[in-house]
Image (cartoon, rainbow, N blue to C red; front, side, top):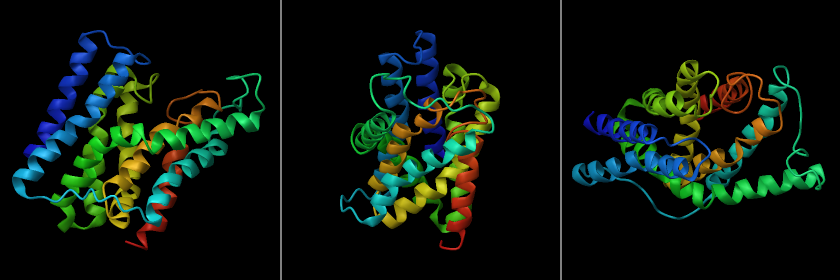
Length: 254
């Protein structure tokens, strides 16, 4: 599809430009690059959807599935913690702000993540969702939920490749293998995002899930020693296992 090629081309060009200009992770410039990278597919979606008459539902009428979208990333993050312990030791959060009780730190970080997921992260993630769970899903809907999920998830995961290879996104120590892991993670997460989009009746629902996951997933790495990129945290083996279980449950419902 021309739209997919254009989405890849714009985002990958941005990544290469940022790398050539010396943008590095953890800097304000990288944050701006990330938002632009996420919104490149969104702009493509808006252009092609208008041209082809493809609906991009943006009704803001929250229902109970929006709550699922908001809290699912929290459950995924917390459940990934014990599953990471066979590969990493526990360190908790007390090291981050030594003066505060551990429970207060967890509450503070969680509330901050939930707030970010429903505000700034939501707006950033909407760029991606307009394309992957918006335009592309509408174009592939006739193939059925699961075949479309596989195709969208593969494209979406591969789309992250320059961020992983050039900037170490999610997998700084295993960049080449990280591209493959990112594809697997995208394949595993896409059904949950499509489920939120369909049941939520709007692209705001998957954007809420996506944005909140981006906000809270880091907890699964802050609280344990990051011994191996591929074996700990939400974007590692524990997250894949949990998403596989969720997809088995979802298989009987869609």
